[in-house]
Length: 445
Image 1 (cartoon, rainbow, N blue to C red):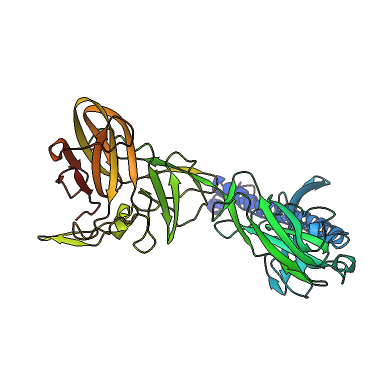
Image 2: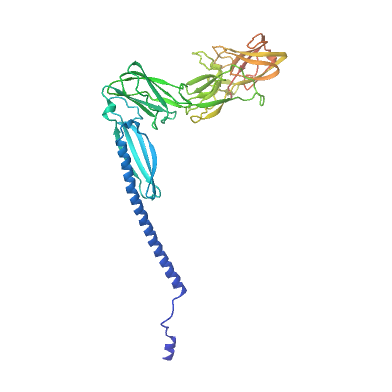
């Protein structure tokens, strides 16, 4: 019995260290969950209050939109405001609508509307909480759609088809009508402008903006519209954008020799089926077609329209020499972002001329020799290019095609044909000069 008493557990025995650690861990986990829950509840509560404010801000902005005296002047905008300690961002997006989205090009008796979308978000918004968005349609009040006058809509689009803002619009009567009390506003973020209460008649509309051109390189293109009482007429959309600048570059001759080029050299810039002839000394600015431009040395033409098709590598027919098939092709087109610039290579043929004795001027006269060599398209409209005065051996470049070379005491003189033995041709598959005649062939195998 005494042994049993000695071995019995003591009533005041303590807990082990492991039990303490486990208890603390369980308490920490439970506490963390409680804290996270409280924080989440507070976050949702804060977002709930913020969302109520955002709804009020959106409703307030729509109210101001609906009360606008002239809805045509409404534009897209973003603004911020602080309520309490929270910053709210309100984004208003405005677009022209007439049955369907039209980009302010609706024409006819149907009224023109603007769709207004308002979105509000706030700083610290939980990811799971949706922002606030609402929209409305705003129509022009009756006083702006006077049945005795008309409305004119103007749309300006860039080369990529998106709107261009800040473009000045001017409008004047050409037949009937009357001078406007005030000119239309500059285009808005949707590329739109308008003229209200226009007396019926025919009007000329022009657009302008510094550094902009249309596809025909006009800095201030114009069009004509006829205004009918009680109707909205849309001018054809202007394709108008910030011009790009192309800077010509030229290859060396025979590896490393800088070439002399004609002082009156013509250049042609091609994009798709359109061509733009320019002087090499002109300001080389162009409409920023996304398809880009290829440069051609010389005044390009076609067999049927004159000019000189031989300067265009793409117009040389394929030719088989032995087992080698030769073909010509333009350089890959290049372009730049609207308002930007880039370099553009101008491919031409290269040659050297040795001028013995005193210095003399060099002159090149194009020759129409279709099919000689095989595949050459010819040059029905003669071109004369002039170089400076030279002595000894110098290197030159000319557009592709067949040329007669002369020297003389004055610029442009054709006094003395250059001897074939004094001519060496480079950058061409035709390497033999016949008399004073050379052919610069753009084709490669």
